[in-house]
Image 1 (cartoon, one colour):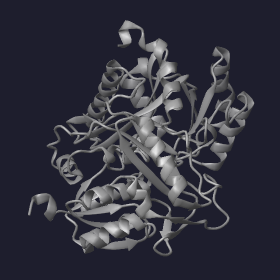
Image 2: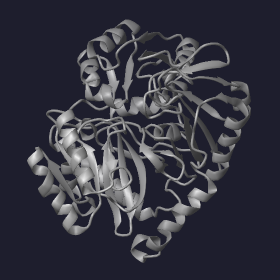
Image 3: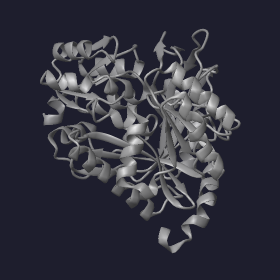
Length: 456
């Protein structure tokens, strides 16, 4: 028996992302889980590997730590935004449990958007967009005047966590500067103690690249393109992410090697700056960037695997995930190998999403049929009723379906076929995620920028 087969990992969380972790870890390790609900994928992995499950508040440090000690897991992996912000890693570590994930202080780079912007300004001002920090209602007008004088549209961001649903963009969500002012005032009133971040709206292509780090060494995962808007053609409200794709190459079709290298340099500088400030970061630094006509520009940092981006990355991970996590904890991270294939993930959601549904939505799956098309299933906010019937929970994403292939569009179309044939019920998704037409659109946008010799 290898060392990884002897390992016992505790997972914290119950979303589709945690389901993908459970599936990868179950390949060679025992899995236990502290979950907010009985996620079918996670339950199956725990049962088949002989672990334990507890349903409770994943943001309660004492409860999570108590279960970790009871389960006798020798590693814990914490990766969701709210548990990280509540200091779950700190509590587990204090209890002597080998824990992978950012401390509360290190994860501030996600739960405090202003902190992240100031860090970015300190290491790479040339890639930092114009921004203003609004502390009081009296600050709103002069801050907005700065953007209006330059004719810049605005993105209004709450300082703290919003699950991807609190950021509003002008003019898609906020029609004019007055609407931006009103929303900023609303945030100051409804989120006492927080400031508001106003950022220039970037024109370009948004993408994500995740750096896996042990605090010293940094390994870049393949870059990914996320679809945050609810409906096709990027319309509707922002969400936690409706789907994502990666390419067979580490870079996306519209990125250059220089783009990837610049992102790596920025993220390495951030990791060094955090270490110098006494808040060393280990785990996953998730960088959100824009490719623009003027080059790479910063959008945000997350302190963990993205969702759905993390599902894409694990789908093409070539080596045991358990070994990657152990290397992060022991600070011995070197290279990570990825299968040279494209990966596409699409989330199915209740019709009301991202708003809360008035009642649970039932749906049926032919799991055997889906797997016959070589599709991967990652259950999220749902519970199982019987062998084929499931029902949604709350207002989160319900089920992710993924595929890998040599071509992005091929993987996308296979997912569409599987949903058409083997999913029944009132769930919705975006067919255009990773479609040939949409990938070609992105390439055509970036083509003039990439013809500049400095960008190749």
